[in-house]
Structure formats: C-alpha cells, structure tokens
Image (tube, rainbow, N blue to C red; front, side):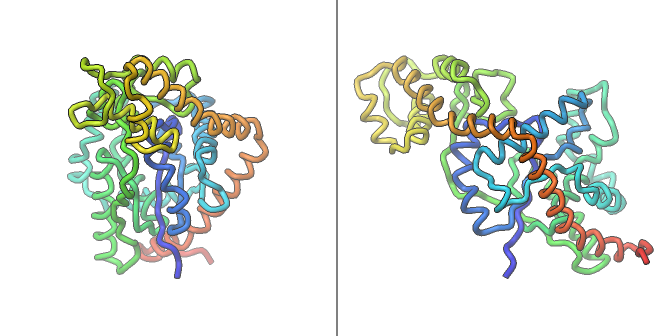
Length: 332
C-alpha cells in the first residue's frame, strides 16, 4: 500500500526555534517511516510582502539547509522550493474560480496582515489561502501539520476540495489536521505561560533560534523569567523554572526528576547558566552541519533539483485530472 501523504510548508524567512528542535524533530524520523512527507519552502507565499530578491534567494536556501541539518534526509523526504514546481500556480488559478469571495473575506489572517501592511494590501495577500489550498490538494495530502493560526486556511482547503469533488467526482483527497504525538512543549523564555513561537519574535529574548550564536543563547537564558522564591522544582505554579528544567532535560537526555536533583540547593543564576550551556552544546552539531551544507553549493543544488523533479512528478497526475475535469483542451 502507498504511504499516506503529509505536506508541510516552511516560510523562507523561518529559521527554526529551539522549540521546533525539542518538540518536533524527534517525530520526523517516525514520520518519514510512516508517511510520504513533502517539505516545501514556500517562496511564492513570501511575495505577499515586498522582498529583496537576493535576500529571498539566500533565505530560501538557508531554510532548506536547516531542514536537512535538523534531520530531514532528502533520500527519505521530498524537499523543494514551491516556485520550482509550476503546478502550484496553475492549480491555484483554477481553485480561485471555485472559491467564493465571502470565504476569503472571512480569513482573519488577511485582516491581521492588512492592518500591519497598509501600504501593500495586495491581491496575492487576499488569495494567499487559495494558493495554500493548491499546495496541499496538489499532492493528495491526507494530513497537514498546522498551527492554530493556519487552521482556518486548512478548513478552506477542505471546503474547496469538497466543492470541487461535489461537481466533478472524487478528484481531491480531503485533508485533515495532523496532530503530532505529545512531545516536549517548550515555552517562551520571557513568557513561560505561552509556547515558544516566532509570532512572539518582537521580544528577541523570548525565543532561541537554532542559528543563534553561543553567546546570544547564554545571554537569553540569563535573562529568562523565573520567580521570587529561589526554589528549583517542577511545578505548575512555577512556569519559568519548569520550562528551564524541561529544556535542560531535553537537551541532556535526562528526566525531570534527574534535572531537579542535579540543581538541588543551587540558585536560579546557576540554573540559567547550566541550561544555556546545555542548549549551546546540543545545537552545535546542527549548526556545524548547516554550515557545511551552506558551503557545499553543489550538493544543495542537487537536492533542490532532485526535490523539484520528484515533487513535479507527484503533482502531475492531480493537475492533469483537474484540467480534464474542468474542460481544458488536453495536449495532443
């Protein structure tokens, strides 16, 4: 039997956070064994915000290299750039014609981003969710890992698929949300009651990026929010200390009780320093691998070329079926 397909898109400006490493990458090896996984650097989506061309190209390669450095083998996963597979844009245009204006008007992300970019409220930003639907439906993805901010877009993709199938038959797989097994939940260093997220990036001390230099990581942990009782223990009423203990346990492979025992009788300053040092040590192999990948342009070029070819082959049957369904004259 064919493996079910999982599709995931990564913004080219998105450097993974420590939370991604500790909470998600541990699942990637299992995912590639159970699913046919596509990881797409969504450079087409990036154009909804005005981009410097050279910076976008650089960030796109950087993002793809991070996926590999963090453990996504190109031999076991399909890694590619969205713009290298023209079928994304072709399908998006067709799906635009099966999406209602009222549906797009309800998209909260458009409202939020428009408020932040009043000088550039473009049509691409408005129809962004339709391109996202095309990304997913093009590969007959049955599962899509999404955050809360993208659930509305996935629901739109489901509605479009159901509408199209209702007219033309079972052309598209209707996707569902992929819920990852419970892993380490890493909270913000400044907001330990909230999950560490790039959406909180306004405060650079709140999150650790995998690309952060050792001195920057140590500084961020030294500024981490704790509490006033100076007792190192894991407890619901001590979110800052509990978060630091969780990070230390994940970075060192220890259990929470072992981490508590290791810091018994020590102060918060010692805890913050040791956790920061553990994270620096854990991230170093990833950072070294990423640097080697970025220095090996020929290898990255090969991965990019082969990934695009594989993705295009996977997309072709769906796009052909859609073109036949809507009545396009087929090539002779």
